[in-house]
Image 1: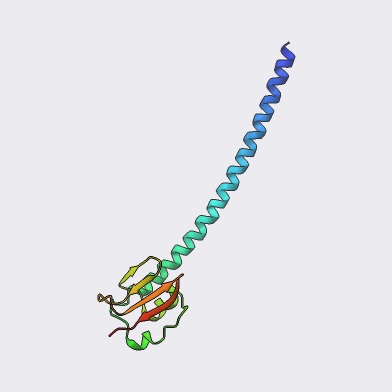
Image 2: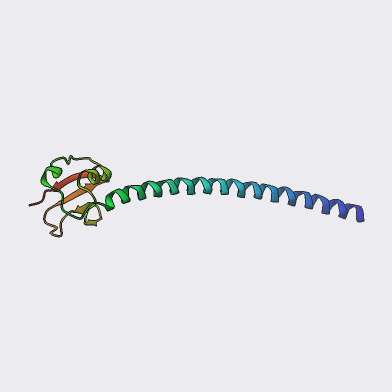
Length: 123
């Protein structure tokens, strides 16, 4: 009677050990995936901080008309920042508007699906 119980106990213990090893392997894989994602996010943040430090030296003066004339439809956010600099204000929704003046009736760029759709030059 003792032999079958001991045998049953050993089999249960073996299955338990295998299940734990599989769980540990899954956790190790998940850790590796998360470490890769963190590394990617850290590099994105580092690149973003580099751009911000370059732009921090720029004063909040509305861009000159000649800069506005360089805008083209379907430019990206980064393209517009390269030409006009950081906006004073951003309104998001179906259409995203970047304002370069306190007067929202002019000096703005409109984006649809993250691409320039249109703009209003300063007065």
